[in-house]
Structure formats: structure tokens, C-alpha cells
Length: 406
Image 1 (cartoon, rainbow, N blue to C red):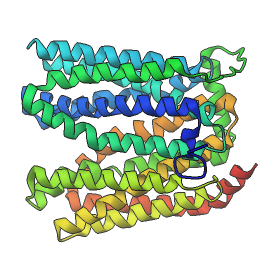
Image 2: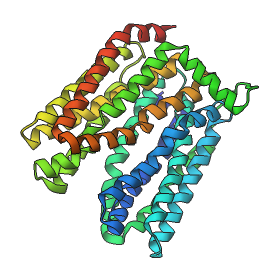
Image 3: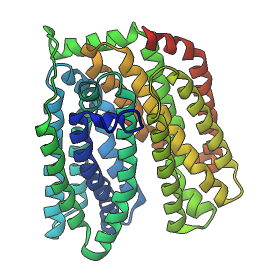
Image 4: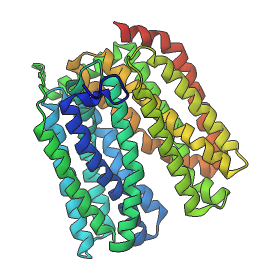
């Protein structure tokens, strides 16, 4: 196979190649829409609060609904759930495009549609994460998760850049329309898959199934500790991205250009981090990666917060991005390699809640703390929180390693 033996070996699996190709197109469209939507909200309201509220509306459903979505992923075919969420995303973008291009869009439309997309995302993530094991098997699971994260971050760089050009030339509506069309690619790829999903018989009701999944995590201390660590890092690490505009403009007076440099640095680090992880051949040793990446995140955030120079902050952003993504991909793989498939959807629902659902809480706390004690001190507090996470990870690393080997 042309992809065997290297960092792209998961691409030797036909279904994963289809998935990766479709998602690359769709994710670029999604990030293009995110940029255009933020600009649209600012153009309509001139309010930073409304920018934050729009983002909160798109993130809150992940926190609230992910456990339920995970239970569904263990009852119904995961590929069909992902296809349904992609259809909802396509419709959401099309409605936003129509309202914007006809001049009828109002801020309440944007907020309602952001909430609609958030609900779709809440059901999409657990099913998509739980689908990887069916696409590549256990041997290439780490590589598939790492390549998926790399694709996500490449799209995060390309999408907004393309979106900025389109908004300047043709307005936000065209970005929304192109994003709607981008979903066609992923729907075609999902439809062409030959994935064999063996559903597990579940005589319980959906509520009982959810309770059973929660009980499984409670009686599996390794899973509970790792999920809790993911939640802690999502909250403690949030000042790095949340307060980037304050450091770029409010402290160092570098304006939008400075913010762009910080964002690009974080994205580049995230790509390098996930690709370096993709080179690993086995899951053995991932708990050490979790410890090291958490410690590196703590150190880089502390230096960032205390930095007297914008360029030192800029140098820290790739390390922050690399640490966050290596931690996330390693934790994801450790969990997925160690749990029974019959619980995979429910556990990944809880993982989504910790990694993504906690992000708006972390951002709100970062903003409130920055108002009270300042942005630099808030970064230091976040670094201390990550250091505590590194110590916890060091304490649990041997048990996580044994859990992986069972």
C-alpha cells in the first residue's frame, strides 16, 4: 500500500480516504463561514458582546446535549447520524446565505441559526469520533485521529483567509452559500463508504442507555480521570485564545495584524503537533505524551502571560497550539483504544462535552477574570491550572498505560 509505514498510513483505508477528502472541503467551508459570520455580526451590531453571544450560542448545545448524542451513537448507525448532521449544516448555511444575500438578515436570525448549528454539532462530534474505529481499525486509530486534527487545523488557516477575500469582494452571503455547497462533498464521501457497523443490541430505553454509559465511566476510574483532565485543560487553557485580541492590540498595540500573527502561529503549531503525533506507530506511551503536552502548555502560557514583548508571545503561540492538539489527540486515542465499542458513542459524547462543551465556560471565566485582575494575571492563573493538570496526569500516567495494554 502506498500509504503504509508513514505518517499518512491511515489513508491506505478506502473509507478513511473518502472521509478525509470530503471533510477537508467541508471544514474549509465551515471556517470560511465562521469568519464571515463574525464579520456579519460585527457589521450589524458593532458589539463585542454580540460576537461572544453568537459564539456561545453555537457552543452551548455541545455542553448540554453531547451525553444524549453519545447515547444515540451507540443505538443507531453512526455514519447515518453524521450524514444527518451534515444535511442540517448545509440547510443552516443555505438559510443564512439567502437572508444575507437578500438583505433581510437580522441579528436574531444569526443567533437562532448559530443555535441550530450548535445542536447539529453536538450530535455530529460523538458519532464522527466513534466512527473512526470502523474506518481504520485499532492499529491506525491514532494516525486517523491525528490526521483528522491536522485537516481541521489546515482548514482553520485556509478557510478564514479565503473568506476574508470573498467578503471584501462580494460580501458575507457568498461565503455562506459556498459553505452550503461544500457539504455536498462530505455527503458524497459518506454515501460512498462501505463501512460495516455492527450495532449492539440495547434493550434499555434511551434514558436507561445514557445512565448505563455514565455508570460505566464512574466504575472506570481511568476514563473518569482522563475526562476530568480534558475538562480542566479546556478551561485552564482557554485564556490563550480568548485573550489573544487583548494582548495583540490592548497591550502590544499591534492591531488586527498582530492578532492574525498570533492566530496563525497557534494554527501552525497545532498542525505540526498533530502531524508529529501521526508518526507514532502505536498507542503505547501516549500517557507520557499527555503529561508532557500538559506541562508544555503550562510553561508556554506562563511565558506568554509574563512576556514584555509581542514577539515572545508570538513565539509561544505555536507551542500552545502544539501542546493543546497533542494533548487532545492523545487523550482521545487513549480513551478509544481502551473502551468497549458498545460504550464508544456514550464515552465520546462525554469527551466532546469536556473538550468542546467546556470551552465557552472557560472563555467566559477568562473574560471575567481578566476584567478583575488583568489579562496577564489571568494567563498566569491558566498556566497554574495547566500545571495542576500536568501533576494529575503524572500521577495517573502509569494506570493509563496499564489501561491501554489490557
